[in-house]
Image (cartoon, rainbow, N blue to C red; front, side, top):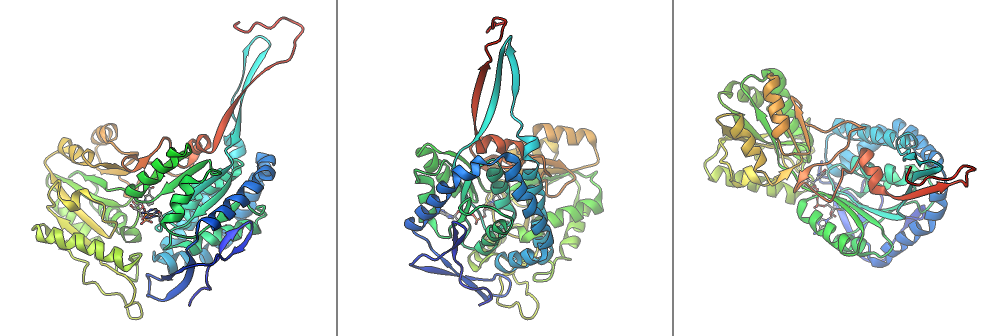
Length: 485
Ligand code: NAD
């Protein structure tokens, strides 16, 4: 076994509940990585109790004192990017360079949290003669985050740095597929001086998720994962009157116009659908090809061929996911769509035969409304749908139930402006394959890609992680107070 048996992390120390454990095998080479506790309700209670006990002390510190812990964490993290990238690579399967990039994004998110004293300044106004009003941004208490497998380091950094710097204490339930990375975050925060109990990690399955949503001492829940589970988590959390925000699945459409820059476009689109082997909620999924663009499509195929499974094309998280993606390709082939590249038989280099790999797959002339055009497959697959003009392309893109990201490839400013005004998605771009906004701009999709209000990162998260106390002050001035003046 590559790593030792995993423990939960509660009140600053390892916790090992009795009961079943799950095994985690590496998607890279099939090696047994570790075993994971499948925690029960009692273990969750223990974590919530630790977070609750830590809340008065932590929330009683100043914003600057809490941010100081994250400055120290930032320094630790910057010095250990490769060590963390290695863990992400082993347990989630993305290649080492992509794992390094993920940790770099966590650094950027931490940097934003460190600037919270400059961001969360609240509001103050002399509202009348002799009367002042101000906002106090008060932390909620114990909050929780439920995270997916695909960005095990970055996604926890969407929530925990901001939530904690703002004074909350937290319980995280990581994906069963990638708990090692999340446990490492907790260990490193302890090293940076985070008081015990402020961050607790509990590993487990579905029952644990339900327990979090229903727990009477948890005030807010964030979730990132598939839409089906996002909707369940949101409605269960709201049913017990919690604040909730749940980010879901995606099926991002990129629109390709004939005037796009051929080489840049091809490289961007190939990198977008093949990065992390397509296991990104901001990957290109559908290419809506407008008019005569066969020359650019040929270049995309050429670029995609450069991605070799197990070399620069990442592994698929597990055998079930691989079978599911293969099923999408099989059915698309049966429907008679044209396979320009077929990754089903791709083989990884020697030594990685037991890993889960698929090669780049491009399916052309996919019918609008067919399974491959509508449902998320979360693999290294690009479906090409043909459209006559930009109007039709926008109609196709906007008919998706999801609205996470999207991009247009063109050199026409006018076409780009039309696209930006009419596309129905939360994060959109011009000539950018993966349209993820950089900090301080926030992250969040539209439509079925999100349930709840606001974005998960940036300034929007300040509203999510705090409640406002509205304060009015009258200092008995010598002159009479004029309340409405
Ligand atoms: P998932 O929904 O299967 O799992 C997410 C979390 O929910 C995990 O912690 C998992 O253990 C738990 N879970 C899974 N099934 C559950 C159930 N039935 N009941 C209760 N809990 C359950 O998602 P995943 O496979 O880990 O991640 C991939 C999905 O996440 C894709 O759909 C992807 O688009 C989406 N995603 C979205 C974003 C975004 O920002 N919108 C970001 C990353 C991933």
